[in-house]
Image (cartoon, rainbow, N blue to C red; front, side):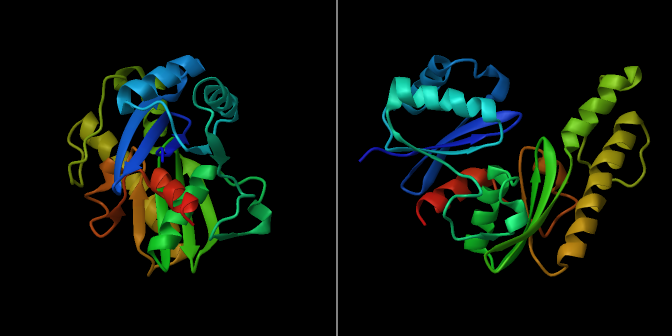
Length: 241
């Protein structure tokens, strides 16, 4: 039997993954580089050495790429396709208010959390900062704030003397130069944002951090659980339900 291809389409990056012997292999591309189904096919075939898949299982928050993925499948794979959305049958209860608006990435992360924890707070640090509370296999609610690195780049783009400054995750209190000052402001500022919302949701729930920007927060969340590729892991759990 052919393997499945799991696809996580985000606003900034697209990840492709296969699971073999319970090990994940992931390839990542910038979303804006996926300009044709042929480009995607060649990338997948080169990276994984595969050109046939049983299922394409997809979480997408970019509707225009859904069409491109359907063309990819029609022209190259002819696999069965599954798009995770709020109407999908899953072992996760969600509010009727969220039925038509909740993102597939939030659902996939919640599915992962519900499978592995009785209750948890998932913090996804990507283009946006998304904080979700899951309890007893129910997605209780979600908070969405500006993305950490997105906000930083927006500031440096609009302030001429800050354009060359990079962030450092050194655990310091006082900034002695511009880099340190910005790092404290952004990393500690977003840390307090996350902790404040998480504490209001449930002080006793474990915090799961995921997403490309989570690496900046290891010093500020020593007891948090860092999960790589949570959306892809959640898609696998969803498929195997």
